[in-house]
Structure formats: C-alpha cells, structure tokens
Image 1: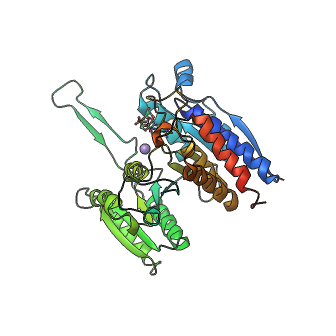
Image 2: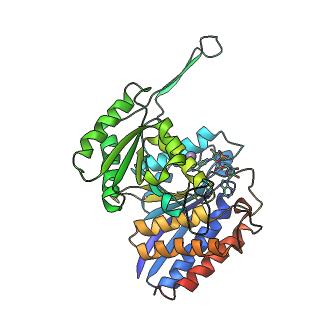
Image 3: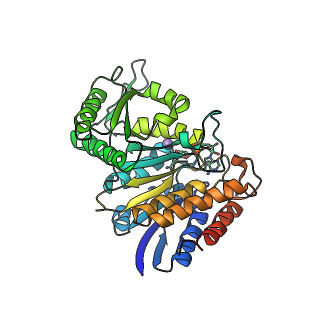
Amino acid sequence: MQHFSIAAIPGDGIGPEVMAEGLKTLKKIEELHGGIHFSIDTFDWNCEYYVKHGKMMPDNGLEILRDYDVILLGAIGAPTVPDHISVWELILPIRRAFQQYINLRPIKLLRGLESPLRYKAHKDLDFIVVRENTEGEYSNMGGRLHENTPFELAVQNNVFTRYGTERVINYAYSLAEKRTGRRLTAATKSNGINHSMPFWDEIVKEVSKQHPNIQTDIYHIDALAAYFITRPEELDVVVASNLFGDILTDLGAAIVGGLGLAPSGNINPEKNYPSMFEPIHGSAPDIAGKQIANPIAQIWSISLMMEHLGFSDIADLIVSSIEEVLIDRKVSTPDLGGKNSTREFGEAIHQQMTKKSINFI
Ligand code: NAD
Ligand code: MN
C-alpha cells in the first residue's frame, strides 16, 4: 500500500463545489486501485477566514503544509476581500515557499469537444504551457508615490534572476525532449521591455544550444497570442514568464472549451516540497452557490497530480473517463451547453472511471 498525504484547500465561491467532486475522484482512485491510500486534511483558509482572523492562513500555515505530499486547491477570491490580499497572502506564498517554480498548463482539446476555432481539429490543439511561477512580473518590489497629487505614480519592478530563468527554461526543454513535437516556443517582448525580456531571450538561446534537435522559436507575446488562434498546431511546449504565461493560458483555455476545463500543476520538480494542483479558473462569484460550475478543471488537476506522483496509468484513466462523458453528451454543465449540476457531471465521470478500469486493473 502506498500512502499519500494531501492538504485540500477548497477556498471560496465555486472552489468548494468543484473540490467536493475532486475529493470523490480521490476516493474512486483508492477504490479502483487498491494499492493507494490518501489521507486528506481539509483547511478552511479562504476569504471568510480572512474576515474572521485578519489573515488568509495561520502564521504557521506554510509549516503545516510543508509536511504534505501534495496540496490540492479549489479557488480563492471573494468580493469581501481585495484580490491582491487573497492571492498575495495565500497562493503566492505557497508557490514561493515550496519552490513551485513551474506552472504546467496543458492546452488540449479533449475528445467530445469542439474548439471555437472553426477549422481546428483535436490533433491541432495539443500543447503545453510552462509558466514561470515564482518571480518575473509578480513581484512585490515597487510602490506608489505622491498619492493624492497630480504627480501620483506607481512603479512595479519585474524580477528576473539568472537562476530562476535558467531553471524554468531548462525544464521546458526537458519537457520538449519527452514530447514528440520537439518544438519549443518562448514568449518575449524584447522590442518593448528593455531589460528583462532581452535577458530572457539570451538565456533561451544559450540553453537551446544543448538541445540542437529541438526547434526553438522566440515570438513576441502579442504575435504569439495571435498564433494561439491562427496556428496552434505549430505549438508543442510554450515557455513564458509569470504574467505572459498567466494571460496566454486563459486564452489557451478558451480555445479548448473554456475555463471550466483547464487544469494546472504548480510543480516543485526536485520534490523537496509539496507541489500544488488547482484549476486555472478563479472562484467565479457570478455562478457560485448554484451547483452549475464545471468540475472538470478540478478533476483533471488530480490527473496531473497522479502523473506527478508516478501513476501515469491513473492519470490517463481520469482524462479518458472525462472524454467518454463528453463524447456521450448526455451529461454536462451549462458552460458546455448542458443542464446538469456540478455533482451530476462529477458522478458521470466517476462512473466512467469504474467502467473503464475493468481493462485497467
Ligand atoms: P474566474 O475564473 O473566477 O471567472 C471567469 C469566468 O469564467 C466567469 O464568467 C466564470 O463564471 C467562468 N468560470 C470559471 N470557472 C468556471 C467553471 N468551473 N465552470 C463554469 N464557468 C466557470 O475569474 P475572475 O472572475 O476574473 O475572478 C473571480 C475571483 O477569482 C477573483 O477574486 C480572482 O482574484 C479570483 N481568482 C483566483 C484564482 C485562483 O484561485 N488561482 C485564479 C483566478 C482568479
Ligand atoms: Mn490566471
């Protein structure tokens, strides 16, 4: 029996609704596999907790999390707490403290779904974005001056270290080596941003020399955003800074079915600390409490988690079960044109896992 400890943080809004389905996926894995046991602790660290305690998590929150094998997050954010507090005091400290410097975001059109891009088929939409996750544009260096005067100004520094840039680019190349596409596309804005992006490009070129069999393209972020729409079939591994990767992947999610489907892994490749798996989407206050959120992003993020833990067969079982339900078209949530609840959609996926696992065990 292999044991894994999981810290679950359902969060706010639709977070707890999709997490409930994710926890059932974990139960299903235990049931079907027999050799895996998860011990799960749930933490109520969210905006409600902030309103009560004046902080998003206890002072020793990171120490508590450090002992888990993985962290599973729903979504954070509520109208009662400014976003810069909920994100800066919970998600970003976790990503940084645990050196989760890779944010992996697959952009893959699942079978059973059509892309809003009219002429693109499944084989055209299958790539992965590696987003830098600990530095770059998301820094707290900077400030505001001369407030309440006509000369008020705000400065935000971008931080790109050689160490941090090299490690994310190295990771992206090793991922490209593993995939069959053998292409790496790096996002830049060296024509508009003076220091950080030329630095980033130089490091891409240096690292590319160690991977002569991989085709390297460096595209400006604005043009690359257009290529996501016009020629996604040319993409295999895309590597981007923190902000560029954030924006590109919401776009990526949109071309493969929407935010309700898109998963992500915040990975500490060395496995010195827990990695964290979560949907790309936020707490969706516009649909929260209605049981209509799509649970796929959360369930797919558990597939990424299983891959990370070394169980590719289970990771594949989860994705192919999601695909069966999409192909079947009988059950889906309103974002995919259906009428079913979060719970019913989750249940349909878990039933498929049971059905398909007959070939699996
Ligand atoms: P959002 O992702 O919450 O919602 C954007 C749109 O997508 C909304 O119309 C929403 O209804 C829809 N959507 C999102 N997830 C869905 C799902 N599973 N099923 C169906 N539809 C879904 O982004 P936002 O509105 O910009 O942000 C809302 C809050 O979430 C803010 O407080 C923001 O800071 C926070 N946020 C948190 C995270 C995170 O926890 N990692 C990420 C992004 C935003
Ligand atoms: Mn985002």
